[in-house]
Length: 128
Image 1 (cartoon, rainbow, N blue to C red):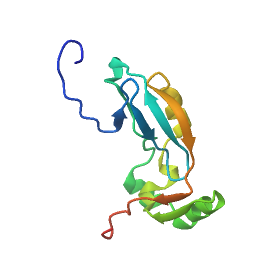
Image 2: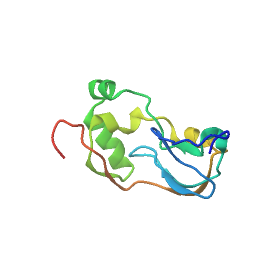
Image 3: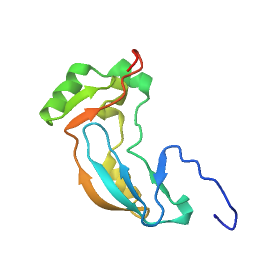
Image 4: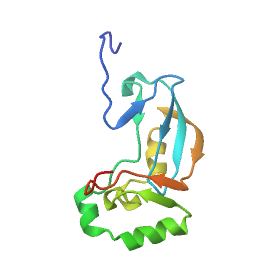
């Protein structure tokens, strides 16, 4: 129920954040993710963002980024990448800490975790 009406909430780019509902909000393949508990705000339809959100389109990422730079960054952070395309590189995402700060009224952070092995979907150029 929202404002006296029964609704179906379809979340695209959002995750459930009802009061007490546990969830995971990931950053990028090279930034932390968070285990969260929803605070149940009706004004957000009891939702929160489901991740950092993109700064760069998939097409722009493929045209401008280089795998050798991404591999060096991941290696320096001790992250092993099992798959993924340039369209999912860390640089294409917003700063997850800023995103989390913007939704502090929607979720309570229970834990933070850092990637060490990452499995991303490939860029679609071949079947996974």
